[in-house]
Image (cartoon, rainbow, N blue to C red; front, side):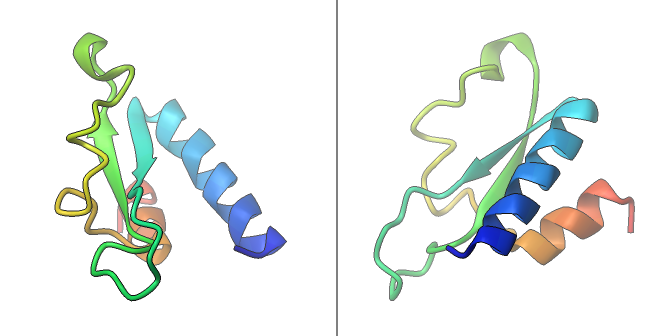
Amino acid sequence: MDREEKARENRLRRAADRQGLILVKARVRDPRALGYGLYSLIDDTAGNRYPTAQARQSRYCTLTLDNVEKTLNGE
């Protein structure tokens, strides 16, 4: 991940936090795997403050950074 993409991810993580959401990245490390590089937005309720391993599984992470940005901007 280059510096610009990491900075964008951090900016979106802060924006999600301001909206009461948690930005979670899939833990898939293989670039050829289906869930690689995908994210999920989770409601920041008391039970989700520390996302479980289940929420980090690739089947729950279906958003790209572009989709996350659109969702957070209300588009």
